Image 1: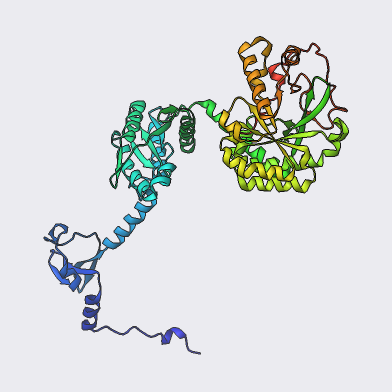
Image 2: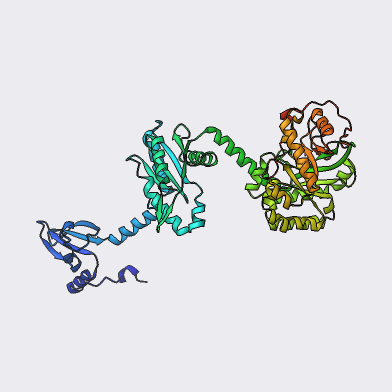
Amino acid sequence: MPNAGEHEARPPELEPSVLRAALAALPIAIEVFARDGERVFANPAAAARPARPGDAGAGREARAVLIERREFSAEGRAYRVCAATDVEDMRRSQDELFRRAYFDELTQLPNRGFFEEAVAQAMRATGEKPDFAVAVVGFDQFDAINEFYGRAVGDALLSQAGARVGEHLEGGDMAARTGGDEFSLLIADAVGAKIDRVLARLKDPFYVDGIEILISASAGFSLFPLHDASVEGLISKADAALTQTKRRSKGEARLYDPELAVRAQNRARLEQNLRLAVRDRRFLCALQPKVDFRSGELDGLEVLMRWRDENGTARAPGDSIAFAVNAGLMNEMTLLLFEETLASLDAIDATFGPNLRLGFNIAAQQAGDARFMRTFADRLAASGHADRFIIELTEEAFLLAGQFQLQVAPMLREVGATISIDDFGVGYSSLSTLAEITADEIKVDRSFITAIHERPRNQGLLRAIESIGEALRTKVIVEGVETAQELAYLRERTNIRVAQGYYFSAPILLGERASAPRAAAEPREKARPAASSRVSERRPP
């Protein structure tokens, strides 16, 4: 069998005319120069381009060109071939990709990625010297601008703000847009003065489509390497300082405080634990007796929320109630507590006596949510025990008395529940509001009862609240009774019959005590419990 290599086809010899035509068809400029520099060949693309970059001529656009050169020999003579490729379109495409990757479209400022790289470079340049700060600037309540004027106006305002934030920065500084209405600053020196000038500039009026808009901004900042030696850590600490500023003093700048990290970690841990408790249904009810101190009998119980943490410890809500409302967890937590209360009814009756009325707290925000209240009322009705429940609402829930009377109260009364105004006297009650609502019970806040025997002004206010209750034919009870002296005053100087507080009993977890606490018909000496031993219940806002 013949060797295949012996029959390999040789490429045909190209005619000079074919070669010239091919070179002429190329978009690449091809030139051949003799050793003395004389151009001996140029294809049409080469003939059309200027001899030098500056020779583009008037009206002609200068374009980026990539030139490659090679030396070669032919017929005993040396030549140089040059190939020039127009890369202007490629360069523009790359520039556009870079701009989109590292610059904000709206403000044309560097974006977060560019800013973080700049911070990293500053860290490498300064080593351990505390030469710069990172600041995060955010508008106060910018959402209101978008909601009132529309997003187009909000975007226009941000575009103007982008131009303003860099006005007072210098060569070693940088401004970037790193969030919706947030700007980040890299500042080399005079940190406080520069931030103050930026905030002042952002307070000046903005004009968009003939509209004058006034708004303020706040800032938080951290120092390298005092607060952190990493890019992410330095920025996050400045952001934490901004959050704290917006909570406490909008319109100002605040330096990062290390205690912020502890509080932020505690909030994050609390949120995670609450979410896990909701997922795992780790809620249980504690019960605090309401005592008819004139007869010594139990008048009812208040259901108080407890949840078990990751260690199995039953925890009082404290600050977690307000947090749960803000985090959107309160509705689910309330329904879980209600289910736990229903499941515990037999144990409650066995411990405290049958058919006692149960006070159950609903947050003011929940009372204003018609959908949630409909769900809760349906659960009450389905339980078959709605008539045992007194729904305790703080005064804020009654602010919109018309809405409450028309929507919330009928839902609850329709299923057989009654209504109590909780923490009365510390909210927003007015006589006109009280005249319109139809509560069944007023619970006087503990702040009026503490040491009432020594506080004449509180005594007068309590008498006034009693008169209001009589005028409205509404039962008045008090909470927060902790000493024999307080109870003695209530017995001797008021017509109130029912009270609640640590004097009678702390909240009781079912199973932790064999029987209900004995309610004393006669005053007995008992010291006020230490503040550390009293549990913060923190009614839902």
